[in-house]
Length: 136
Image 1 (cartoon, rainbow, N blue to C red):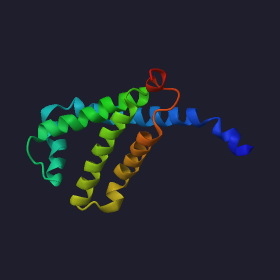
Image 2: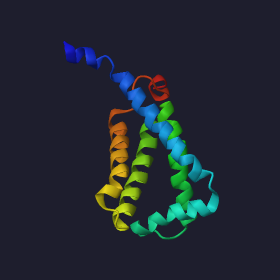
Image 3: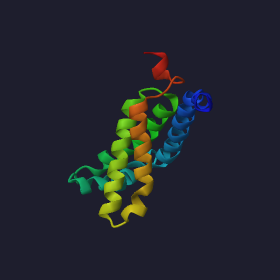
């Protein structure tokens, strides 16, 4: 009975999770996307650790756009699973970067944790209070 009562708040919980993590990624993505080509090139250098050292500004822009626009999509519940897939990949690249530069688990933990959140959103979906759910 008590567990059933808690389950009534499942959809609100998913909404809070989506809006909270989405807005934080908008906040973190804005300086990167508005930073221009120099910022994008620095950000895109992380791809060299995956064997793709070419066109760092393009990779960096794609990463910044994924964070900023992906955050908007996650928060609104529009194309949630697709945005979460891109953001999960972004977090995988961040984890590889952290381990490759010697930061270890403590340096990579935030990217790992956030990647787990996005992977979970891929699996559970956007929830009832989302644009995706309302236009199925």
